Length: 95
Image 1 (tube, rainbow, N blue to C red):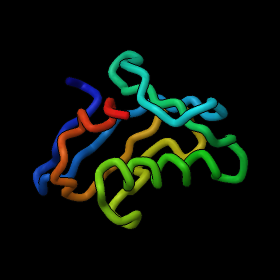
Image 2 (spheres, one colour):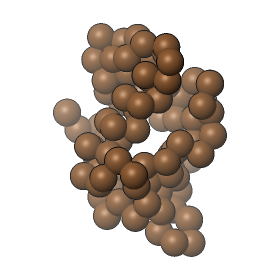
Image 3 (cartoon, rainbow, N blue to C red):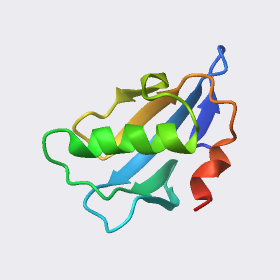
């Protein structure tokens, strides 16, 4: 799948298309080469980015400091790295 890859240090790199202001936070499928995530947070004052990183940390059972927004601070298209998660990215599709 094109929406995730592992780098040389076994860090997971996710390509995401984020839709803030949704009713629930959840993965809804693919959007081109990205995974589309709906976020239950408004895109105001970085709240959506914070909610995204916390959601990913919770899903992958890692501390917040292991989830890093690499690109897309002010865009719907984001690249996020999760340092050595140990959990398959398919976890995002489970409720």
